[in-house]
Image (cartoon, rainbow, N blue to C red; front, side, top):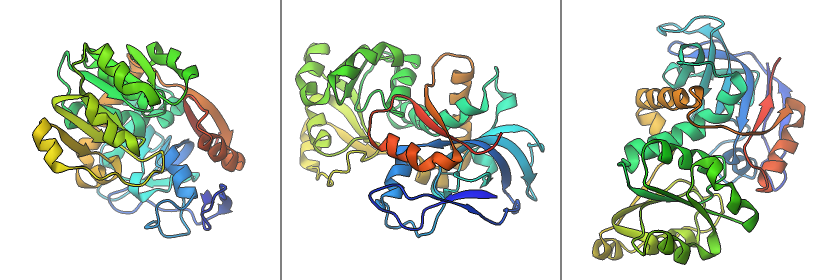
Length: 330
């Protein structure tokens, strides 16, 4: 099989396309002939060496879509040639023409209520499942509640806004890094978007000085600390990443106590290791929303596998709107 390998992480993307041994379906697993694999910011971070616990060499990639190739012993409910989308997550390995996946984390696309093409499925499954689980199971969003999303029109933020709106949020607000993105809110379910440097006053103005019930932060840095200023009593800050690459921010538990606030973290990979069936179920529910066109998914660009380094470079600039994909096969 063809695979993209990182053996020397560094400042510039350094994926190498290699011929590797074709994996067989081990007991309890599936193999997939990959047509598309999603490119996420975590792949940029992996290429930079920002996850030192990941041993080199390795094949990055967290999400794929294609066709079932082989079915391992003990796996039921799939058939050879069936179109699927799957999450590789902590196992990585998605940047390959053949991927080994857990059946619990694999969604049969032909069993959705409406047609969903492979490219859209690969572009959506990880971020959409994350957004859906965060709303349903982490903050347990109730109808009429308000949320604020940092990096609101990024790959994850675009789904967070739409899912919040679809599940009945009363006010959906977001922050972006520059003024040229503030007009994109209606595309992703937002009532208003603010430039991050001025978000506190604008959020309070938009909520009659009451603040929001939840802040969702994949950015990190000072936003962690400042976000408490817009949380209502019993509000929750959910940490979803550190895309800004900033040092960790310490939190006073006494302040949480005095202000009746909470901080939670959510990371889909470790959650899927603990609750794979729950993640697969939620991914199916989330992709149903997409198949029924109740939410949208934007693809910024599709790159041939030979141009994977360029895809990572472009994504790392922060200028993209929508998902990047690698085309692994015809």
